[in-house]
Image 1 (cartoon, rainbow, N blue to C red):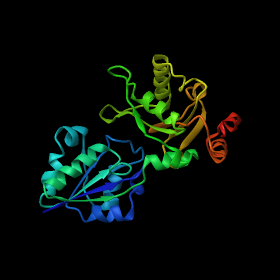
Image 2 (cartoon, rainbow, N blue to C red):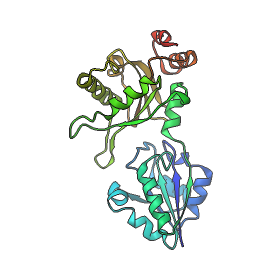
Image 3 (tube, helix red, strand yellow):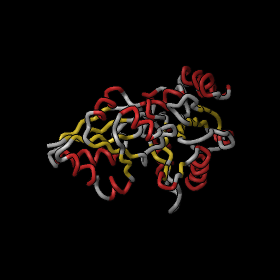
Length: 267
């Protein structure tokens, strides 16, 4: 039987893969990659080929989700396959589903972890990891505005927890949700739900291009962040709790340019 190895690529470019991950790629018979779950702005396929010495086949969302990863599983039945994934491999549930399917087929699976946007963005913000509740994706409002982000933020705030928001992407269309778009969606949801938890004065933290040499991290009232230029994608958004630890407040001021009024949230 063959083997399927899920390898995290990290956050920004082809140099973010771990040495262990690179060695696994070099010893693989087939190498696939997907970039529909996240954007790696600095990743160049030709550069990766030079570093790894391997050809790379890029898969689309339909190859893994609609076709059930058939192209990967067929190769993994009698060979070693590396599947390269932005960030950490099993953050996206689609990859967990593929791993389960492979194991049921008798294909051995392993995971080589990579840097995750969850830990990177939270670390850059200065907020404390243990104070985060359930995370949520803010989707493009193509078929109406989903209320799920608002519900999750509300539930977390009721428990004095922060919320990490993944922002939707449509890689095939080169469409990546910006922090400005996400905040406008949340304000719209506030109009609909009226629970007074995502107001223009509410504190938010935007993180752009985590993992690069020039990440942008900015904290402030939603009304101010909507007009702030975060630069190119990918973007992430954090909605903090109504109360902050004193060290969180100081970190937001120092590392994210938060206004002094956040000290009034300490409690």
